[in-house]
Image (cartoon, chains in turn green, purple):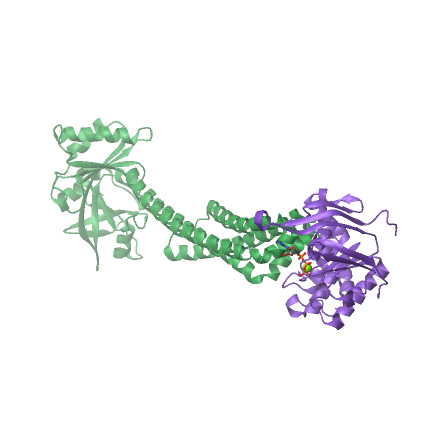
Length: 400
Length: 235
Ligand SMILES: Nc1ncnc2c1ncn2[C@@H]1O[C@H](COP(=O)(O)OP(=O)(O)OP(=O)(O)O)[C@@H](O)[C@H]1O
Ligand SMILES: [Mg+2]
C-alpha cells in the first residue's frame, strides 16, 4: 500500500512540475538564507573571541583618569611605589606588571619604522599572553639597571630585518642603541583592528630614563590568581588605590580599573547582536519563503479538491489520500531543505573566505531552518487536503 | 435471476438539499429493486432527480432517509471507508462530466482504480491497456485529457469504470456529449459488457435511441419513479 501511495505521490509531483518547483524554491530560499547568515555571524563571533583570547586571561588594568579619549581629565600617573604597594597589599594578585608607553622610531641600517614602545617587567610577556619565539626575556639585573635591551614584535622585525636574523643585532631607538635579545611570536590584529605586533618591549627603567624622562607608570596590569574572584580583587584594588591617591569620601575616582573579561563581554556582545540582527533578516526570508509555499499550496486547493473527489469516487480511502498528500509535501519540502542546506554550505564557505572569518558548521540552525520550512510545506500541503478528504466524494467533485 | 434476492434494493429513499427556506426535496421516496445482470435505462425530465439517485446508488452521496441494500448489506449503516471499499470492489461510475485527472495520461487515469486495489504493476498495465483497447483507444494511452476529444475522454472514463471488472456499472449520461455515431459505439460497448461479462448496467439518458439498448426503462418525474417497464433490448 505504501509503495503504491508513493507511486501516486511521485506521479502527482511530476504532473505539477511548476507547482512542485515553486514549493521547493520557497523552501530553498528560506533555508539557505537563514543558514548562511547565522553561520557567518557565528564565524564573526568566533573570530572576535579568538582575538580576545590573544589578549590574555583574567586581568585587571589600572589606568589614570576615568575616561579615555576627548574630554579625558588630566589625572596623575602612577609611581613604582604604587606597584610595590599593590604587590604587597593586594592578595589574589598573581602578577603585578607596570607599563609605561611611548612611541619612537626604530632604525636598523637603512631601515626605519615608527613603532610603539612598551617599558615593563619580564612578567609582562606572560600577563599579556606573549610568546617569545626566539631569544629570551629580561633578566632581573637588566630590569634593575635599565639596560638597553629589547624584545621586538613580528611587524617591527619584518620592517627592520626582512629575512635576516634579528636576535643579537643592535637597533637604534631615538638616541640610544639597543640590543635585540628576543623576538615575539605574531598575534595578528587586535579585536579593535590595530596591529598588535607593531611593538618593541624594553625594561621599565630603560624607557622611563631614556625615552620618557619621567618616573611615571601609565598602566598597571594585575593578573588575578586562578583561585581568586575577579570581582573581589577588583573591589580591593579600587579601595587600595583610593587610599593611596588620597581620594576623600564622596569624591570620584581619578583612576579606572578595567577587567579584560568585561572588554571581552562587550565585544562578543556586539557581534552577538550583529548575528541576531542577521538572523532576524534571514528569518524574514524564511517567512517569505514560507508564505510562498502557503500560497502555492492554497491556490492549488480547488484543483486538488476535485482531484481528491475523483480519487475518493473510484474507491480511495481517506487515509490513503492523506498519506499521498503527506508524502508529496514531505518529499518536496525535504528536497527543498536539502538543496537549501547544500546551497547555504557553499555560500557560507565562500563568503567566510571573503570576509576572513572561520567557517563553523552549526547543526542546530541547519536542523531548525530545515524543520521550519519543511513543516510549512507539510502543514499547508496536508491540512487543506485533509479538509477535502473528509467531504463526501460528490461534494468534493462539485467544488468549484 | 431470482427476484427474491435482488442485487440492489432501494426502499423509500429521499434526498433533501439545503435547509430551512431553501430546503428542496430532490427525491421523494424511491423504491427500486435491481437484479444481477440487468440493463436499465433511467430517463426523465431535467431536474427530476436522476443524477441524485445515481450518486446515491454509486455510494458517492448519502440519502436523507430510506434504506439502500447492496447484496443484502445496508449501505446507509456503513462507515465512509466501508463505502469506499464498496466503490473500489463492486462499482464502476461514469460521470456526466468525465472527471478525469488533468495532466495525467489516459493510461494512468485508467490504472488509478487498480492502484488502489493494490494490483501489481504488470497486471495493472495489462488490464489498463486491455480496457483502453476495448473502448477503441489503443494507441492513445499516453495522451492527457487535454489532448483528447470529448468522445475520447468519455471513453477513457468508461475504461476507468470497467477496468476493475465491477459488478455494477453506473453511467450518468455517458453519451450526453457525443454525436449519434459515437453514442452508438459507446452503447454497443456497454451492451456487450452487460451481455458478455454479466455486468449489471444502469445508464441515465435523455435519448430514446440510447434507452432502446436497455431491457428495462425506469422513468423519473419530480423525484419519484413514474413508470418502470421492461422491453426487448436492442443490444
Ligand atoms: N447540491 C445540490 N444542492 C441543491 N440542490 C440540488 C443539488 N443537486 C441537485 N439539486 C437539485 O435537485 C434536483 C434534481 O437534480 P438532479 O441533478 O438529480 O437532476 P437530473 O434529473 O439529473 O437532471 P439533468 O437531466 O438535468 O441532469 C434539481 O432540481 C436540482 O436543482
Ligand atoms: Mg443529471
